[in-house]
Length: 188
DNA sequence: CAATAGATCATCT
DNA sequence: GATGATCTATTGC
Image (cartoon, rainbow, N blue to C red):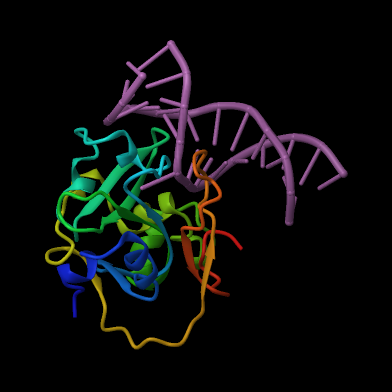
């Protein structure tokens, strides 16, 4: 079962938390989401949408269940999923995956990764391993080649909440969610 | 193992 | 013209 639009049409925090344990699917590659971060609307200055609606941030203000893909540091791309009802900004950054399928393809796309553990551990690595590029910016994640599957037999896990990584503004806001004890998260 | 320098460009000031 | 929601290789303990 692919997660429906109603899953994403909720508060960014709820979506970020509930995405843990779900399966991100792109073509033949699949990975279990083990780490996410919420980027809110309003006064969250760490979010791209904080500066208002621009050409780049248009997707974040649009309907939920879309992909927001952008280039960071001139070199790497990051994948976000848009939350909140249409018109309200909010998105969830996917930071780490536990590879589930298409592992050989991922290894080919990430020659620098020695271990399976390093294939999608970190937002830039994740997009490389999954073959996600800016071409997918604005793509509908409830249908098509890039989706999130929800019918996963959920083993029990605890959710750990920490501050977000690698930002300057609002650096102490606890908006990073990860599966406690999972070895595929981007850092302990 | 920890710290750090360098790569590189779309977006916004 | 400055600035990043990063990754990798390299250096130094």
